[in-house]
Structure formats: C-alpha cells, structure tokens
Length: 109
Image 1 (cartoon, rainbow, N blue to C red):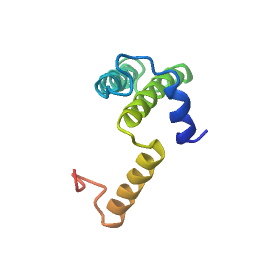
Image 2: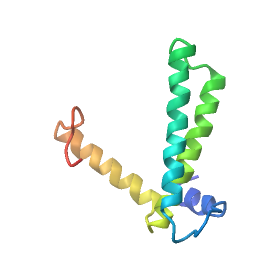
Image 3: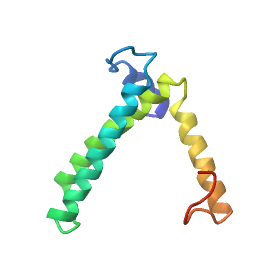
Image 4: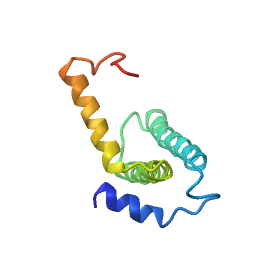
C-alpha cells in the first residue's frame, strides 16, 4: 500500500465533527497518539531496562498506525497529499544532509 491509497482508505473511517472543515480535531488526536508512543517508550526505559520485546513492539506499531491515521486526516483536511508530504520531507532532509546540516539545529526550522 502506498500513501495515496492509505490516505483514501483511511478517510473512509474518519468520523468526527465537521469533517472536511475541521483540522483541529485530528491535530489534537495526533498529539494524543504521539504521547502514547512516547509513553510506551518511557515504560520500556523504566520497566524493561530499555529492551523492547516483541509484544511491546506490536503495541508501539499500533500506536504508530494511529499517528499515521491522524497525520493522514490533517493532510486531507488541508488538501495535502501524503505522498507529497513524504517527498518534500525527504527532499528537505537530503538537502540538509548534503549541506552538513542534519545535526544540531539544522536549518529552516
């Protein structure tokens, strides 16, 4: 599956208030889901000596899927293509790499 297909299919499951005119709801959801990913990693550090077992890896995978879903909904609300978002991000990162700006504060933040 590519991003275009994911974005289209995931939109079929987007049931929230004022869909198609509400970028705030998925933005708040993204923040919550990113927090859940961080929470699971924190617990790996606290409870598992920094070692991620297969069960935890699957839990994190599910949360990352939720992060992707909310990212997709924000992109759709703003009329952006996830494929284009991904492409622009790679272009930015490789430009930084070529200029030696991947470390530290980078540039254009």
